[in-house]
Length: 118
Image (cartoon, rainbow, N blue to C red; front, side):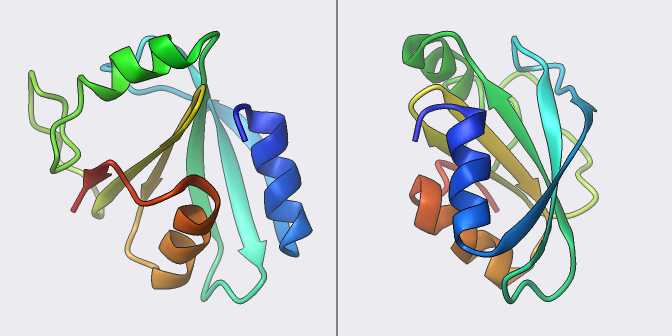
């Protein structure tokens, strides 16, 4: 999986309902993303994730390197409303801010373990 379309397709194959939302922005990432609202498939409650798609895997790696292991940008601290979890696959960085174990397990199953977060 290396783009948002394949992410959405894979989520839907796992019977997750995916609603495409508005634009997502994080000041420390170089591209805008898309909000995706996930529900169903055993999730305790709906969850919103942010999907950032890059032109190249190298560009995604460059932005991923800006994030410290706790999920904050290396240049500042963020007062997250819940624990941040950053996942990466090829040209994608996915951010989930929350603590739902089923959501984290779903994302890890698709994208691998988080590369940063709490």
